[in-house]
Image (cartoon, rainbow, N blue to C red; front, side):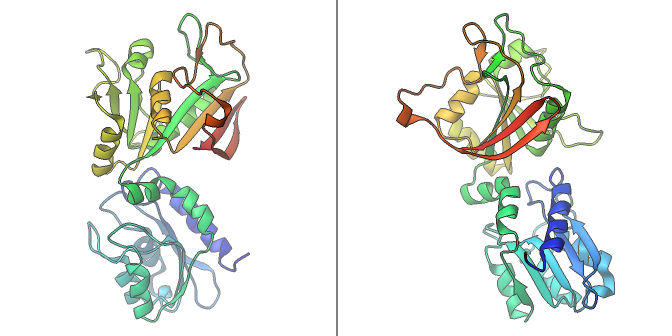
Length: 328
């Protein structure tokens, strides 16, 4: 294990704490290690857009102890002036002697220039520390910067045999309270939620995160028309190609989109190859699919060789339910 592992793990924790605040900026964590003792003397996570980046927060907390110290950060420091100044210049001015970075930043404004500037200033660089873990945690941001489109997460809450609604149309609630709370966290992590007009008519959802007062609430987009009294309002209504919708949302700074349903909408995004991850909440219950509504009712697969395969990247128990994360 790298000698910087503990510090990077702490930086990742701080980045996780910024997950709901930072977008469309990356959620980043940073710690400053004392030159003599190696103890943490400063730490921070990226604030909301327009606020300090993680490095600035950590340097401010460290104060004079930053001189000669090591800065451990999850993402390459920025080298350009946007809403805030370039972090690399603050690092140089603070007298940091070494910078430990997990991964480079693919953003066109950075893309290696931050690391190059630190090298020019004769600051020692250590890279690729816990890089795989940070890439996983920053997957939505990295996808957005690489493609210009949001990272698309499809959410399903179903019985063990894949039913999302019963014969009479009832669906609340298939999963338990803990799984439903986790679903609200998914909403808060997303900058937009997409739902079909059929789901709006049948369930009349609000599609709010409702985690705590002041929590960021995502944009709500209905494919089709929402009734004038629908709880999802105020919302955007959209009719048109799905890829064009994603192009527009990406250009507007939406880093992650959550597809909440219904089955036809989720199926259409999967069929079009537009989903990067499926979060599937499985309840220990059986419905039988003769009359119940399957989670992917409109998805068709003619032969075994045409199966849409992915890989499980996380499995988590939530009360009596299980959350399965499938990378498509």
